[in-house]
Length: 302
Ligand code: SAH
Image (cartoon, rainbow, N blue to C red; front, side, top):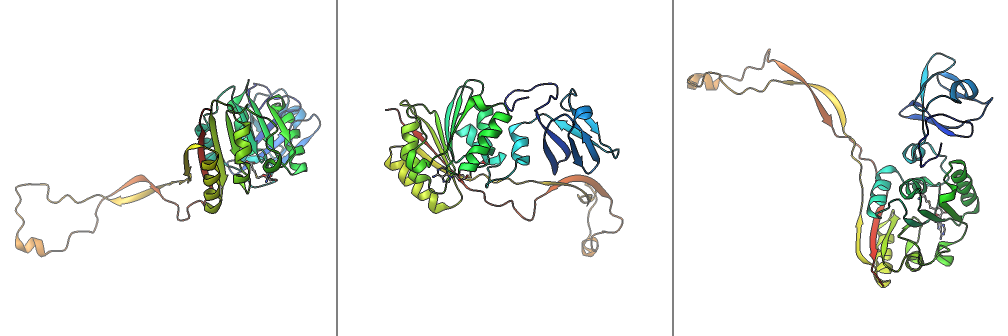
């Protein structure tokens, strides 16, 4: 198992995602002799997981069943242990596309945080790219490095424990893309430029507040970045419901039938009106909240 490559069978040391329901998924480190507790009872790693195929339905000790899924960056994002706020798939999808990430890309990122975005970047740039990720909180940097090794993507990433605003990314002239998720991104824009290749590249900064966006845009302009644009991605989930609607009344079926003045005064016939059952979608009453603004820019060739 690796987070960037699919394997068929569950092995010792793998991270498997135990799917109990859409709202209840558990990341599990597979180890002989260990048991994982679910609401349907226990899963025994030695007999229920090791040697089985990913995607298998596993019956738990109380008779209910779960699926055991191969890990992906998307599943990791919804199951990872939070050490910070994290980026979710809606923003991540836009970031990886707008930064034009592809196999072989070299990317700089700060802060690493809980590694949610990092895993998606790694899957996009594997097998030949590299991620340089900078995190100034020592335990977070260490934990992220540990997880990258455990997820067998350690060879694709270098974690640096330093302040990106003061010391930069630790590389220069190598990055195709730079991503910033820190409170004062404008202080790191100069370092982003230094880290990037001479022939250009893309930069993105994520900030929850518009004041941060303003300062970042000013810094990007001062550093000569072009095509600066900010966008916000909002996810609107529609609820599918079955509703019963009255059949529309298109008036008399006989076009020749003449409606008298008397008929026109009568109220429309509502009783026993036939109904049709159909599916419709209903908008949520509460819109999912604002996450942040994504500011993109291009570094011109020098
Ligand atoms: N994008 C990450 C979350 C980042 S949270 C994810 O998806 O998981 C922001 C992180 O930036 C925090 O861990 C914080 O410690 C780190 N950080 C803030 N300022 C920093 C700086 N100047 N240099 C390096 N890391 C910084």
